[in-house]
Picture 1: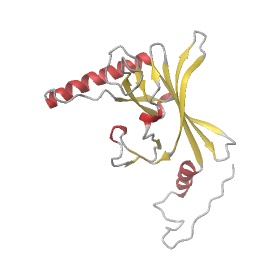
Picture 2 (picture 1 turned 90 degrees about the horizontal axis):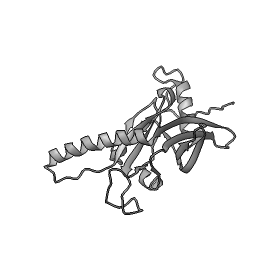
Picture 3 (picture 1 turned 45 degrees about the vertical axis):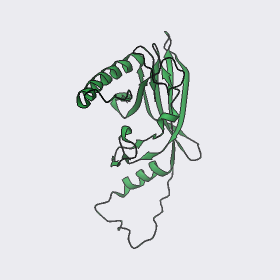
Picture 4 (picture 1 turned 45 degrees about the horizontal axis):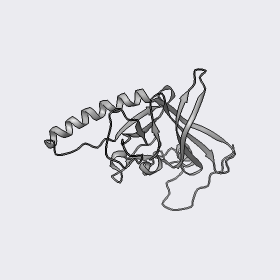
Length: 205
């Protein structure tokens, strides 16, 4: 693929011989940020005895590459520079994935795909999966510890939120996806209910 690089003319621009700037990396970074489209897909699947993957429900969302990040549990607060690591944030994850639930025997799969603006080629940037049983174990441990700490610090007057953020590593440990996980309310088909059951499926976002 041929790439034509144009440089805006300005007296404030540093010279091409500026030692503090890696011009080759700057070109690559701009290509990643500006010249590619990204779509993340989250799917709830099962694997057959033959090893085939069956998708039961999925959601796709366009995302944008960023050289900075912020904590998902504190949206709107200050971002931190993450370069050379690139992040793809979904700030409205509660709305986008509000009806994605995972239960016993299922697993959550996440895939990030990049394509050029003309959609002539595509490439998988990230793939990862985690089984319900492993996800539930991590979630239960997190909630148990956090709830006890919150109760001690507030003398029992503060009720701990049941949402936890769990990381899913990619193949060979490259990259990760951070998921917001909470329990599905019982007695209510809407994720906005309040009653909880320790054996209920997990609500993954």
